Amino acid sequence: MPISLQDVLKHSTLTPADPVIRAAAATAAQTQLRWIHSSEVLDIAPLLGGGELLLTGGQALATATDRRRIGYIWELAERGVAALAIETGPVLPSIPSSMVGAAEAAGLPLIELRKVVPFVGVMEAINSLLVSESAAHLQQADRASHTMAVELAHGGSLDRILAVLAEATGAEVVLTSNSGAPLASALPAEHAAEAGPPDTADAEQDHARTTHIDVSVRGIPSARLSLHTVAGGDVNLARIAGNRSVDILALALLQRMPPGLKDMAGAALIRAVDSGSQNWRLQQLAPAAGIPLAAQLVAVVIRSPGSRQLRTAVEQLLDRVGRHSASYADNEELLALAVLRPGKAQEDRKDILAGLRTLELPEGSISAVGPVAAGISAAPWSLREARLTLELGVEDGHHPAGPRQTGAVLDAEALALERFAFHSLDEARRSEFVRQQLGAIIEHDDQRHSTLMETLRVWLDSGCNTAQAARELHLERQSMHQRLQRIFSLCGGDPRGTGRLAALHLATRLAAL
Image (cartoon, rainbow, N blue to C red; front, side, top):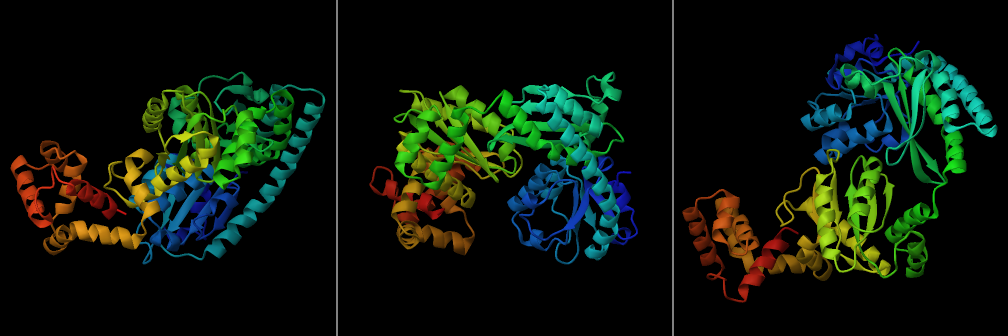
């Protein structure tokens, strides 16, 4: 009989911890466990197989940034972890609200352990119950995998191969392409007559009963296998059998719809651009990926806990705006190249920026679009500048690209000055230039806790438009004039119409670096 999360929370080894569910309670009611594991490592997700209750004392979370905490939640959810239990106390007094919100959005049950219990004792007691169940699951999964292989060897269709898996697991099985198009599906015989649209009242519990497994062909993510167990079904059996079937399905896909040379070359091209391969390698791969050697193109970098799930949507956007695209997802980063139309490079680039801003991204995501590169040889430069834009954007919440926030899309062109200064001036020279131009204003702000630097930056960024700057700063126009007069007195007079205007503007931008 499957062991549920609710059973474990009521187990005698865990009840002394006074556990309480803080997020995804509806999901928790249907969650089944495969294993219990404990770790203080925030990068643990790739080492987990899915279905685990993860216990943590919260030491690493207490010192992590809010962005890293949110990413931690999404990484665990994407990996298929069943639930996360965090011990609160002197080190971490409470679970941050950002983590609670992310867990609710991701459908990951989040449990607070309000008292200390020995994790080793909990794991020994519960895992001993799970071992025998796991061994039985492995035997069933191996039998199903063997039967699927026999079906494949006899020329069975994808539907017939999936039917074997559906019968073995008692789950609805669906295989879809990366674009979401259905490739094959099957229902267990006893439920085939009940097939129909899902019950909307049951939608909140789908996450706990659905397992998603990526199927790669020759290293290229080519399809997704989804197993949805009926109420009361064994989720762990579906997860184990699904993972055991991946190689069979990959072989079946290879026979029926092998990944094209273009897809394989596109992924290889992105990896070569990212690794700084020699130019001859880029010129070798680009034509095979459908990218002309002399084409104008732009690099896109997206850092997101859901980078792999975003790949299809990003590719569709880039193909719709330009002519061709290639992408590659690795860990939390999605890299892409888009070919722009001749004579309309800047127009296409603006459309890409606008399109990225419409995508729904997981919390903690941030992306950047690099400058236009003239030919495939310049692609590594566009990618490096996009990455630099991300780094500058994370550090600075006040430059023209706007405040840093979840889903922010940064424009490398809007940070051209900052990128130039980063490459051309070391930190000491930047600081000295800022001191020479703005020293008196900085000293005034430090001594009087004023915001003259911010006022000057907004005014200069608006093109010295006093009315617009006042609106952005939520100031009365008279107050804005008074601030400007104070700024002018500190920096040697009104800079308009003088060569000092450009120097002051550059200094306000460099101050953020």
